Image 1 (cartoon, rainbow, N blue to C red):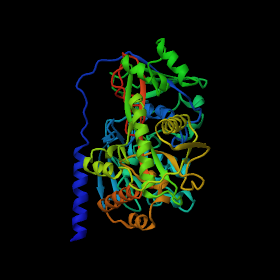
Image 2 (image 1 turned 90 degrees about the vertical axis):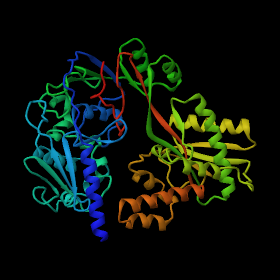
Image 3 (image 1 turned 135 degrees about the vertical axis):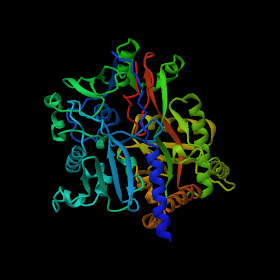
Length: 496
């Protein structure tokens, strides 16, 4: 009976998911002749491997290619090359129905076999850490190790109309993972290593093609004939050496879009109606030294004081950050009862005996330096405690033995908590980690992850502090500027 119930549950999920795959094509479009000029901090010459590129470099890939499925601006799955997906065999097999109206920029139809060949190139060329979901496909790890042939021996196959992927084990986040830029369809991936030499001979699956590459300073994209004619006709991506130079060009009308302009200008740009602030998954947490002598009450009071300092910081930097208010993930802040319970828990400890000097470590960066300097100065002005901050080169790990606490920077995605729990695993009990490993269903895993969050908060071991926003300086003529759920610019909805 249990097996039947699980299978039926997955069937219902599949049907709901399919119902969400509704294509919305406007009946008539006005042809756009607009040019958009976008500031970018680097234009890589090698676009063969995508997973290691920065978000802004990946914007190039997102403009010229499409995925099987993608994330909209709310982080929800939407169809792209695939019009539907049927999830079978208890979440092991994914059957994608490929649309019959999708074409390469050269006019040839995109076929399931094209996607199979692309995935073969991806699993061959990308680094292991950037294709973790694909390594769970049947036979892929053996193929990478030279122990299997790709054709007929791995779980990626094609029919005339469908792409079928078979996993080794259930992965409830597999579709979300497939929305990442490295899985957007490209032709002859090996040629992307030398784009300046090959861009004219490569067909593209996206709304735009690369029309020109001017050394390493500018790349020009042109709208494909098969794309929505209301999209901008041309996109110029111009390299700017620093955010100040980018904003200076923006101010004199030479740039339409500048992502993350100088922090000092955010307030002015907002008042002028030239700033769009978008919630991001970039987050900061406070981790206390596991072996430190600080008591629970000491930690509780330090957390309360740091939170108070950040409240004051937020008052003057509302475009840049949002206080976490007890949420470990940005999408979690709708659970008001849980957050209220955590606020009650965060009241001052009755037996707090905080040392006169406490030490805080963080990874070296300009944003971290500003945050730590602000907290340190706030402590000096409002308490009898001296907070000493140290900027460290390299990522902060569980070993902070020389410090009382550390700031941890993470890209914490509510729909995929894997990276968060991987980084903070030293602070989680082995018992809870094992429970996650052996969990049988998505619901069971979710329940255990909630227990982990509660455990982290109740023991004051790892605590949420703030979420960052992405900020975009935008020409007043630009409409619908936004980022997708992966943090990449959505050129397909941007108009001028």
